[in-house]
Length: 445
Image (cartoon, rainbow, N blue to C red; front, top):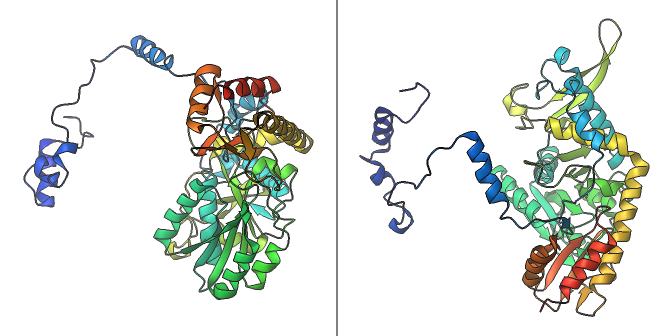
């Protein structure tokens, strides 16, 4: 038998002996019999490559095609210049994804450096790393940063208006790092400043950080003016979870006095469902550099005076003493970092503003259309939004989603409950798309 096949009869017996059981059936004896497989897997016969391709093409045709996406929830259907893919495929950048040896990784190191530079300008912060898997884990790492930087403080307050997906990831990280979390209640769709003030007054000496969002999960642009001063008066850090592309037109975390900015960079040109994770970003003030996980690339000169790039901060246990490590991040999300860098360099700050303006106008048209027959209304009519809003309906959201996909190839939004849907618009949708969706709405009950 091949030496790399682990489950030989002798190996299985050795493992069973170590577990103190005599058979596989005994090993799974605690599993309900109704849940256990009672016959061999019904696997089809092997096929050649051409047959496999035909088989999966046949399966794919059974899917209902979605051509228009009005769903958001933190991930948005933005366009991407065709040149980005060409740039990301160039051989200069296709070096090893972990750039330990700078002399052979200059392409990788340079685009990470450029990415960091652009992200600090976008967020208004001092420093950026380039090693976060997605927005949820970036937020969790920001929470751990806050606790690590604040001595004997183990409590972090999180706004109820954060994405529930982000919150669940933060909960998992906190549980296994011994971090206590508390939820700041929402009031009329945004973080309650009164509740936060009261919580800080009661437990301010224990609070390491406060996490808020803008835009929040329901699309509302929250007013965080003065929030940094409130947090800092209790020696707590302010963490702002953001949608990266919106920072071209909204007040940046840096302008708000935040200590850490985090979130997902998918909105910077990464296609939806791109086959894996997106790209989390994590930016901070210079004072927190030593607590930042991942890597930071710096520019320097070589022995001949030429500009070059090196890793200037490596916080993993393989680089420094384990007890001083601040990170277990092992990937720099190289391809996604390069993709976003190329996108930002091609689109530019003015292009990002234009994209946000087009998204805003499309969202207003969509809202007007969806509410025109009086059977739907904005959940928080007095609150500002950019390109995403929460809609309450008199009809079933399930029936709307099913009909929109079946009849129009449209994903109309994200179901919040039976009669509430979260809808978003970008520069990729048209008025004709919204009109077509509204015609389908008329058939919903």
